[in-house]
Length: 404
Image 1 (spheres, rainbow, N blue to C red):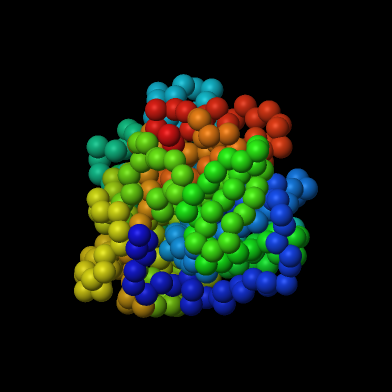
Image 2: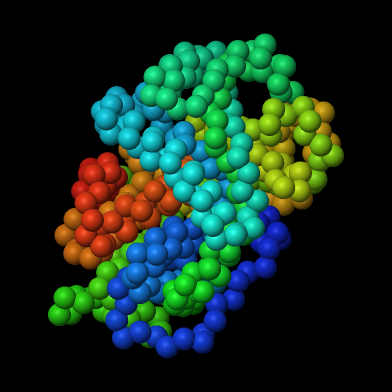
């Protein structure tokens, strides 16, 4: 599967970590993780900190899959608003899920600080504006709901938007204590720390099948085989080698990254920007003062091969960016397309397979992939070590939209 194509920005900001081969492969691992991107690395960290022996397998060089095209937006709000999620799964579970997302941001920041990972983690507010007048009531309803349950938020009318931004919309929901990150720097830094902690890293190994033998799992790959007590699939938007996703769509989206802009003084706290319309436009800044602008989602799973199409979509996104920021001299420096996954019920897939013991999944589908990876790593850690985790029920694989 071609999960991204074009000129990617994040690889231009860092060198890729090269794992050491200076270790002896274990006869039996407590946990083998399939996928060495964001989800895989955070899961490995949770497992090794619990005293488990861990190996990560990836069919590519680590971090060069979806992580290289990750938006780097970290938000507690989701593609489905809290008041809508309450209607879908009930008040208690919906509010708890939002709390998990909110707490995950602090957990990510804690990892960055405690492991001293240089990854441009910066706290930002988010602005979700009403794309048209019809969405104002939706925005207001969400603000009321977030306030009711204690989530830091605000509401801007058109006049307040004019005062704080270079554009105005009918209304906007402001959520505080979100963040931005360079996802590739973060994963590369995590990989280095994981190796120092004893995690065994195996690039260019593709898992082909898994068999249960004497209460152990034999993992057969394109190269050597592995024995493990547990296996965790953190394969992102790739087809999972074992099991089948139910209620998920793989689509593609387009992104351009601009030239450096002189300053963002008229951009309220360089807030992360997105909108109510689906598919939505999003905008964020980078540490070197570039714009990252994405959107124009299409119902196709693979990134297009056509560089001409990618450039055309980037120019379409440029027009939208110029409408929001007419004072900037914006040019396209990077343009790419990437696959992304969405679940029908807007929740990630996290948990043990319904019929395959010791097979676990962390598939953070949706616009909050990194946040889902963080909260999911903690849920899976508890499940693997046999510790009760009530939150696991919310995102379990047994639901109608899950993994079979």
